Image 1 (spheres, helix red, strand yellow):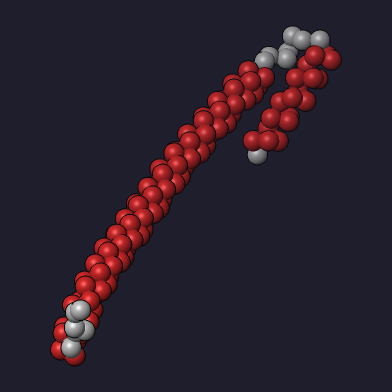
Image 2 (image 1 turned 30 degrees about the vertical axis):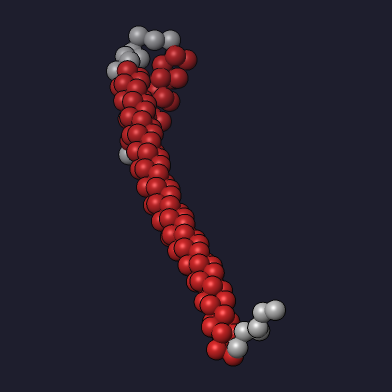
Length: 125
């Protein structure tokens, strides 16, 4: 028959058992810390990526605005050139009407051109 362990031996055994459990707890704690660091790192990377995407979106919106502004400016210039062209054509037309000699025309034709000349003069003044 074997003798039961004494108080000191039981204490030693219990201490060894607790140290083993503490080692396991320490491993679990280290694993949890590693996981927490990984999660924090992942969150940081996610935030950085989000900020980068927002920056790229702002740059794209800025470029889009510049393109739209340039397009509107070209359209405005095109309309201005068209308006100037129409004005030149109108001036040429009016000059040709004003240059018509009505002395040798039929009365109705002369009257028509004189009315046109009067309208042109009215618009000029």
